[in-house]
Length: 312
Image (cartoon, rainbow, N blue to C red; front, top):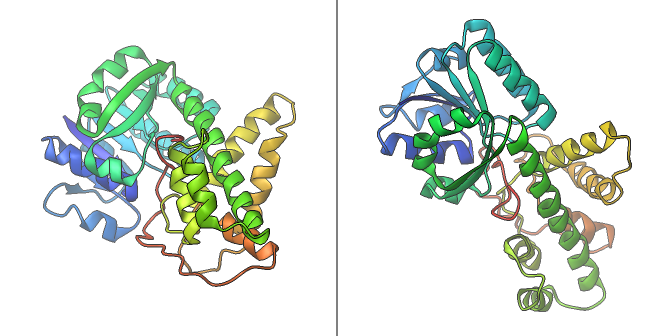
């Protein structure tokens, strides 16, 4: 199939490599030129998103937020999308996605929301898990593409449902990560070593993918960039917006968002994005135990789009 991919960050480049390896003709675009240069000689390097659309039957989007997705899809519709399939792998706002699905269908195209349930390592290995929303016929049409980079994929309902499920999982997973980020410094302040706390959680009923992934960082006070804190705050903000539209309070979510914003205020201009684990260091500083540990933020090119199997 002629496929296109827009957004070649930590996740996107792994998916693209698998699409190429499995024989799909690929066109790619990213505003960050070095990300495109990785695929020189392997894929068509497009000059802009519309150039990707012109060279593709199916276009993948891996973009930072719903606003950018909306802008891109609306540009596609103006250019003509008859017979085209757009697959949004981003974490987007479900209400927006539902509207875009209807607009694409009316214009003769189709849109699937297919967010990811794992991270850069799984993308590179072709073992991602995804959930997919949209028309069932379009889901079947896209199966040969999903086969190239997924360990599993599941149809969950009409347009926007995939993003709804993704946000539900992120709400639980990210909030859990923030709970541990708040707890580890306090226990350390009270004299209980982070290494011992980590071991206790690893040997308890609370152990899961998220707990292990994040508490290992908290134990070491190393906050390598795997999933940008700004993206996590954006995802939680989408959940908050749904509560607001229902005119009910978000309770625990409000605290999680406040914690994210407090940590994000420590982001220094010109430095790499902070990881979702960084609020742990913010809590250390609030407790008067701040220091300048090696953040270990390897691979700072475009923080990934998920936090792992337990959330995204």
